Length: 151
Image (spheres, rainbow, N blue to C red):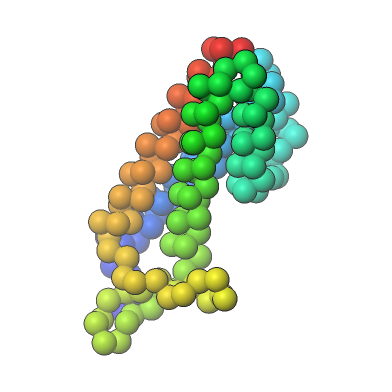
Protein backbone atom coordinates (compact mmCIF):
# COMPACT_ATOMS: atom_id res chain seq x y z
CA UNK A 1 0.00 0.00 0.00
CA UNK A 2 1.32 3.43 -0.93
CA UNK A 3 0.64 6.75 0.70
CA UNK A 4 -2.61 8.21 -0.55
CA UNK A 5 -2.85 11.49 -2.48
CA UNK A 6 -3.82 13.51 0.60
CA UNK A 7 -0.79 12.23 2.52
CA UNK A 8 1.53 12.94 -0.42
CA UNK A 9 0.10 16.44 -0.83
CA UNK A 10 0.55 17.18 2.85
CA UNK A 11 4.14 15.89 2.83
CA UNK A 12 4.81 18.04 -0.23
CA UNK A 13 3.49 21.09 1.62
CA UNK A 14 5.87 20.32 4.46
CA UNK A 15 8.81 20.09 2.05
CA UNK A 16 7.96 23.42 0.42
CA UNK A 17 7.38 25.23 3.72
CA UNK A 18 10.61 23.79 5.16
CA UNK A 19 12.52 25.28 2.22
CA UNK A 20 10.81 28.62 2.89
CA UNK A 21 11.69 28.36 6.58
CA UNK A 22 15.32 27.67 5.74
CA UNK A 23 15.46 30.66 3.39
CA UNK A 24 13.84 32.82 6.07
CA UNK A 25 16.48 31.69 8.59
CA UNK A 26 19.25 32.59 6.13
CA UNK A 27 17.65 35.98 5.47
CA UNK A 28 17.29 36.77 9.15
CA UNK A 29 20.87 35.75 9.95
CA UNK A 30 22.12 37.79 7.00
CA UNK A 31 20.25 40.82 8.34
CA UNK A 32 21.71 40.24 11.80
CA UNK A 33 25.19 40.29 10.26
CA UNK A 34 24.63 43.38 8.13
CA UNK A 35 21.12 44.82 7.86
CA UNK A 36 22.12 47.34 5.20
CA UNK A 37 23.53 44.65 2.88
CA UNK A 38 22.14 41.18 3.49
CA UNK A 39 24.04 39.85 0.48
CA UNK A 40 27.15 39.71 2.68
CA UNK A 41 25.49 37.13 4.92
CA UNK A 42 24.05 35.25 1.94
CA UNK A 43 27.50 34.94 0.41
CA UNK A 44 29.22 34.05 3.67
CA UNK A 45 26.72 31.38 4.74
CA UNK A 46 25.27 30.16 1.42
CA UNK A 47 26.08 26.50 2.01
CA UNK A 48 25.54 26.34 5.74
CA UNK A 49 22.99 23.90 7.08
CA UNK A 50 19.88 24.95 8.95
CA UNK A 51 21.30 23.93 12.34
CA UNK A 52 24.37 26.13 11.82
CA UNK A 53 22.21 29.07 10.80
CA UNK A 54 19.91 28.55 13.77
CA UNK A 55 22.92 28.54 16.10
CA UNK A 56 24.18 31.72 14.41
CA UNK A 57 20.80 33.40 14.88
CA UNK A 58 20.99 32.67 18.60
CA UNK A 59 24.56 33.95 18.91
CA UNK A 60 23.96 37.09 16.85
CA UNK A 61 20.79 37.88 18.76
CA UNK A 62 22.95 38.09 21.90
CA UNK A 63 24.76 41.02 20.31
CA UNK A 64 21.49 42.57 19.19
CA UNK A 65 20.18 42.37 22.78
CA UNK A 66 22.52 45.22 23.71
CA UNK A 67 20.56 47.52 21.38
CA UNK A 68 17.09 45.97 21.34
CA UNK A 69 16.46 43.33 23.97
CA UNK A 70 12.82 42.71 23.00
CA UNK A 71 13.59 42.10 19.33
CA UNK A 72 16.52 39.87 20.27
CA UNK A 73 14.23 37.81 22.53
CA UNK A 74 11.66 37.46 19.75
CA UNK A 75 14.39 36.24 17.40
CA UNK A 76 15.64 33.73 19.97
CA UNK A 77 12.15 32.35 20.52
CA UNK A 78 11.52 32.17 16.79
CA UNK A 79 14.84 30.41 16.13
CA UNK A 80 14.05 27.84 18.82
CA UNK A 81 10.62 27.16 17.34
CA UNK A 82 12.09 27.00 13.82
CA UNK A 83 14.55 24.36 15.02
CA UNK A 84 11.71 22.21 16.39
CA UNK A 85 9.81 22.56 13.11
CA UNK A 86 12.88 21.58 11.12
CA UNK A 87 13.40 18.52 13.34
CA UNK A 88 9.78 17.48 12.84
CA UNK A 89 10.19 18.02 9.10
CA UNK A 90 13.19 15.70 9.14
CA UNK A 91 11.16 13.05 10.95
CA UNK A 92 8.52 13.21 8.21
CA UNK A 93 10.64 13.62 5.07
CA UNK A 94 13.43 11.23 6.01
CA UNK A 95 11.10 8.48 7.14
CA UNK A 96 10.32 5.27 5.37
CA UNK A 97 6.55 4.92 5.24
CA UNK A 98 5.36 1.38 5.79
CA UNK A 99 2.01 -0.21 6.46
CA UNK A 100 1.43 -1.37 10.00
CA UNK A 101 0.14 -4.90 9.39
CA UNK A 102 -2.26 -5.21 12.31
CA UNK A 103 -3.98 -1.86 11.67
CA UNK A 104 -3.41 -1.27 7.96
CA UNK A 105 -2.29 2.33 8.60
CA UNK A 106 0.81 4.00 7.21
CA UNK A 107 3.55 4.50 9.81
CA UNK A 108 6.69 6.62 9.52
CA UNK A 109 9.83 4.68 10.44
CA UNK A 110 13.32 6.12 10.79
CA UNK A 111 16.07 3.57 11.02
CA UNK A 112 18.56 4.78 13.59
CA UNK A 113 19.35 4.42 17.25
CA UNK A 114 17.75 7.78 18.02
CA UNK A 115 14.45 7.25 16.24
CA UNK A 116 11.86 4.72 17.27
CA UNK A 117 9.05 3.90 14.85
CA UNK A 118 6.52 6.71 14.87
CA UNK A 119 2.84 6.18 15.43
CA UNK A 120 0.50 6.77 12.54
CA UNK A 121 0.75 10.33 11.32
CA UNK A 122 -2.68 11.39 10.05
CA UNK A 123 -3.06 13.83 7.18
CA UNK A 124 -4.53 16.41 9.56
CA UNK A 125 -1.32 16.37 11.61
CA UNK A 126 0.79 16.70 8.46
CA UNK A 127 -1.33 19.63 7.27
CA UNK A 128 -1.13 21.21 10.71
CA UNK A 129 2.67 21.01 10.59
CA UNK A 130 2.70 22.68 7.17
CA UNK A 131 0.36 25.40 8.46
CA UNK A 132 2.57 25.98 11.50
CA UNK A 133 5.61 26.24 9.22
CA UNK A 134 3.78 28.80 7.06
CA UNK A 135 3.06 30.88 10.16
CA UNK A 136 6.71 30.59 11.26
CA UNK A 137 7.88 31.82 7.85
CA UNK A 138 5.52 34.78 8.15
CA UNK A 139 6.81 35.57 11.65
CA UNK A 140 10.43 35.26 10.52
CA UNK A 141 9.76 37.72 7.71
CA UNK A 142 8.19 40.12 10.20
CA UNK A 143 11.29 39.83 12.40
CA UNK A 144 13.48 40.50 9.37
CA UNK A 145 11.46 43.64 8.57
CA UNK A 146 11.71 44.85 12.16
CA UNK A 147 15.42 44.18 12.23
CA UNK A 148 16.10 46.10 9.02
CA UNK A 149 13.89 49.00 10.16
CA UNK A 150 15.57 49.18 13.57
CA UNK A 151 19.12 49.30 12.32
